[in-house]
Image (cartoon, rainbow, N blue to C red; front, side):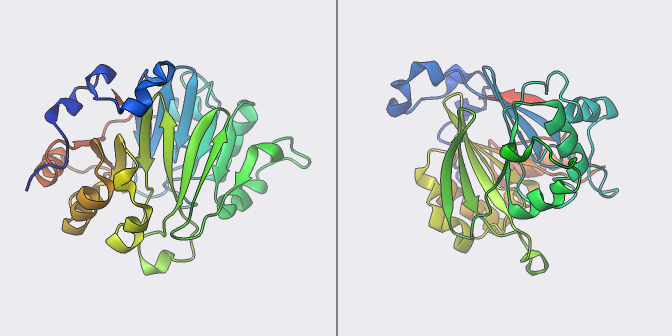
Length: 277
């Protein structure tokens, strides 16, 4: 199978190696690239210049098969200490415990007065009980439940983010409000789909193949499945695929399996691993 990547050079992590779209080149101030720091499961921090975004990064131990950052990293995340002390935007795809827990999210927001939370109504409702009465956080909690197949674009704290209504995988999770995100940062477009139902029916209507996605962050089971690869190559066509959400204790062969499935794809497995595009 031919790789979906335009050329192997995209695996070089210096931002200058990417061929920039002419429309982006008109705004050179935004061409500094984006760094993506992996935390655990699907938790990441996106960084560019002074801007930082957390996605699915604030959670607690959910089960033995789910990874956790080191205690020191988790404490820094929750208490908004360096390098997580200047986060502008916190995004949560859905309320499941390997992606979100209200306690660390509330702690981070109370410690970091600059951060805004953008997520579903279900996540916001889960959080409210953790906040003190009359909390000043209310203006920084943005409930943005988005119907399946719908999308909306907003600029929050100077960061453009597009919300995608993507249903959660599996019929038993149909009642879970679920969002995907496209974050524009440093002249790059980063896609995070959470645990979305990743089929042609759910993804094709967004026409992400025309959205100029630079980095697609996708669950490992999507990347290694036949249908997932078909959707990636036809309906997303990103410059780089990154697989994550590898179960705790999985063998080192997982990155090789990802590479075999999609040549050029990489895998996040180690907490605090950082790549730059």
